[in-house]
Image 1 (cartoon, rainbow, N blue to C red):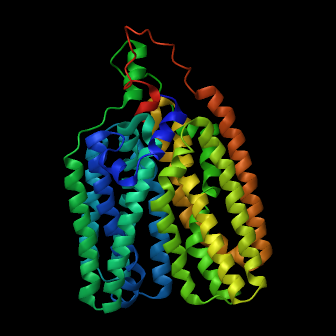
Image 2: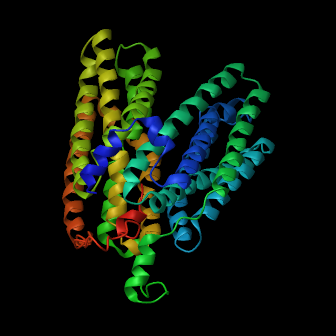
Image 3: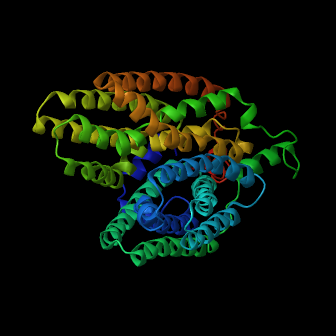
Length: 449
């Protein structure tokens, strides 16, 4: 089945039907449930973390800032560490270990009240969190095969639904505001890791078809003698570097739009939560359909261009939102949130799909671990960039951000197109009717974002 036919087939099914019968079968179905529970717990804790550190542990604003900054840096190292380990150990066991690590660190968080004690605990939590996300996608890469884009769409829908549910519960705990209420939120997050680890335990370790294919081609059961390293691959490192910029939509939605609304427009402050509501609803409703149009090498590369165009347009809309009254600003900012979400829908799939396609088939774990750094780096560098440069420059700053993003998207598309011509596997020879080719050993079938 061709890429286009697969995308149309996936888009034609409803969300619930695809969740019941996801690409990858039983393994994928269990992992989607585990991911939803994990993100529900994340919604419980993430929404209340800053308030907990402020009102329960009584840290100063500067200490909270340092805590969050160090946690972000620790998260950057979680992804490549997970990729390196996944190239040497079973992904299933590593993922269970990440869930249990976070279970322990959250328990310690209830016991630690001083800044010095909390610093390594929070850093270890974020390192395990980022490592777990990378391992989840590596697991899916090997489980869903060529249908990795469809699985990625389902995983984002499940994750956003879980996170929204957790955030809603957290709002109740924050409204209560007592020490016991915050402790309950932390314990809820910890229990989500227990449930997720138990579910992962029920899965089977997915086979790495790409490595098995490479070993078969070499005529030996031994691994290739010279495994490729992403750190010695300038073309792939350039892809990761540019992908940092291509993740800026996250900071625009969560930092740029709310702060711009409050400081530069006359729109009501109550509009700020609507940005996340628009984002969550659209991701759950549209991710599968958008993903079906980014499946395969050419479509994934083309989605990079569309991302630059859509996000660039959203920056223009934000820039002009300050030039009118309340109604104009409200409409402009809601439109910008819509456009940013559409850009995110395209980026979330095309970024990982290209990371898989551009990596050597027999070294994907290490390569995808390095690719995962892009999102973590953006989460650390994006907010300061927006507040210190883009917003400080006013509307001109937003126009410059849109122009840079659009330019980087063209650069990324061009570089990816060139590399895809050199790393893409040759088209399979037509199979004879009497001896159909099996569909579980092609290189693409061991990958998923």
